[in-house]
Every structure is written in C-alpha cells, then in structure tokens.
Length: 179
Image 1 (tube, rainbow, N blue to C red):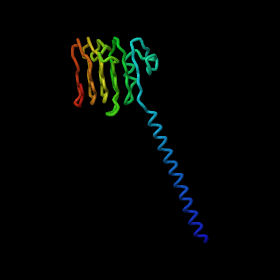
Image 2 (cartoon, rainbow, N blue to C red):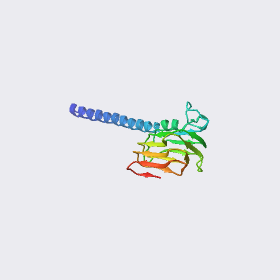
Image 3 (spheres, rainbow, N blue to C red):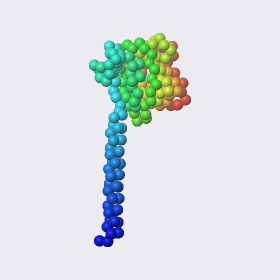
Image 4 (cartoon, rainbow, N blue to C red):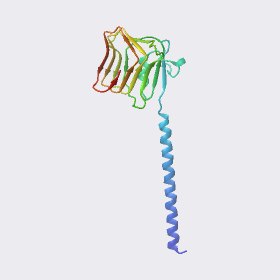
C-alpha cells in the first residue's frame, strides 16, 4: 500500500474513533440529564393537628402541625398536601406555582370537609401570585375573608364549604380561576 493511501486510511480510522467518542459522550450526557430530571419529583406531605412542624411531613407519623408549614414547603409542581380532619386556627398564605400537568394540591382527607380552617386575620386562605394550585375538601369558617385569590391564574377551588364568614371567596385576578 502506498504511503498516502496508508495515511488516508489512518486518518479515516481516527475520524471514526473521534466520532465514536463524541457519540458516547452525547449518550452519557443524555442519560445524566434523564437521571437529573427524575431527581426533581413531586412529594406528598401530611398535616395533622397533633403533628410537629420540625418533622419531615412526609408521612402521617412525621406530619406537620400547620397548613402554613406545608404551604412553605410544598413548592414543586405535583406536590400534594393531605390535611387530616381537625380544627386549624391559622392564616394560610400560598405563594407557589404548579403546572398545567402537575398542580400543587392542598386537600382535606375527608370529602365531607372535616378539615376546618379558621382565622381572625383578613384572608384565612390566601393564594398570592399562585398558578395551578388546587384547594379541595376544606371548611373555612368564622373569618373576615374566607378565601382570596390575588394575581394568580388557573387555580382550582373545588368542593369546599365556606360558612359564617364576613365575605366568601374573593378573586382579585383577571385570569381564569375555577371555583
């Protein structure tokens, strides 16, 4: 074989090896990205009246005591907060954003709305600049304003009881809300 032919074949072979190494790196990067995406996942949290806000909130035996604690920790799209039956005397401010596919959900555990929320504050349950948040199965009572949605959109306030309040549900947002 002539020297130029050998050199040409050798160069082709080296190019092939370089492309193979490049493809392996691309495949490794794709796999690492998929693994990283799976690390960012939704969580389920729990609240009960005899819980403890210093615990993890990730199961009933580690449940938080206040819905407010859950509202500051459930911040990823798809997170779900289950609230046990009982009386919760607090103002809850929710400032989180879910997505269309993965709402952030705050739910009483009983469809009869036995998780009762009261507050002497102005807005007992206050969604501020929140999107794709779902609130369901609560009773909000004996408050100034039971539920207020301010500058958020695509929130769902469904199957709640609002009783004995000065004002019911107040929406101060030009965008869509489902009640």
